[in-house]
Image (cartoon, rainbow, N blue to C red; front, side, top):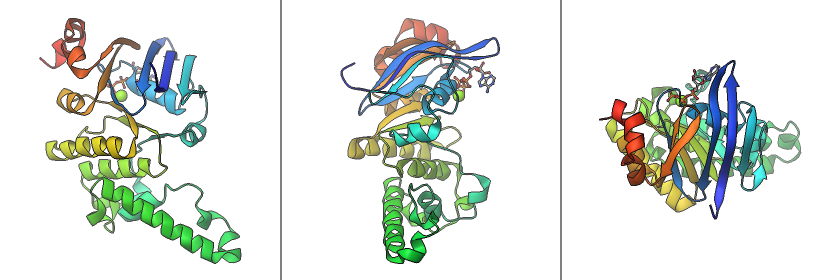
Amino acid sequence: MADAILVVDRLEKRFGGNRAVDGASFEVARGSITGLIGPNGAGKTTCFNCIAGAIRPDGGRVTLNGQDVTGWPPHRVYAQGLSRTFQIPQELSGMTVLENVMLTARDHPGENLWEPILRPWRVASREAEVREHAMAMLRQVNLEPLAHERAGTLSGGQRKLLELARALMADPELVLLDEPSAGVNPTLASRLVEDIRTINRERGVTFLVIGHDMDVVARLCDRLVVMTSGRVMVEGTPDEVLNNAEVQEAYLGSQYR
Ligand SMILES: Nc1ncnc2c1ncn2[C@@H]1O[C@H](COP(=O)(O)OP(=O)(O)OP(=O)(O)O)[C@@H](O)[C@H]1O
Ligand SMILES: [Mg+2]
């Protein structure tokens, strides 16, 4: 691939005797929205965890922006431009939507003990900058009107949008989304698709998205990678993949037709 932001090469991860990821190889083109699909237990989430550094692979290589990041801890992979969504922890549900987004900002000088005493003006201006940036991210996912509501009052779908806004705070180049529309009502799921497409187009952010809902995935993605039993079975455009006889037989045939 000419310009791959992410290269996953013969990735392996075992849990005891279970080969969760068993030599998976695929690439994600810079600027694309790539879907990772496959039946339950295919190893999709485990792949994500290996890419983002949450777990160490047993074999293979992950290359991000030309840099070998295999086995790096999550904060280093994050600093290299990869972001992923996390569920809003219970403790943060009492804080406002805006505060939740602001909390993810890096290098928060308010956390430096001496900075507020020695250079209070810098803290104040940085605080205002972070607030403004957080507001821009909320605007991007159409949550600006809810900025001052408590996060705990959001619906499931709105929460997903907030998680996306949080993931965008660090200006990532690549964002991993694990089933962003799971449990989200169809109206909000469509909004989520629109938001991801807009962010991709306007900010040039590349997305790698695990999805189950074929309608959502086909509408959202430029390319699909199909995993079964820890390996990549087929790759291509949504049209190519969804019309592939092997895919229909092994995966779609059983579950979606
Ligand atoms: N932490 C773990 N410890 C032990 N086994 C695990 C662990 N995480 C995943 N597995 C196993 O690895 C295999 C792949 O799981 P994984 O969650 O990656 O699949 P998936 O494709 O994300 O499935 P789903 O579509 O259901 O989310 C499964 O057999 C699962 O039981
Ligand atoms: Mg999963």
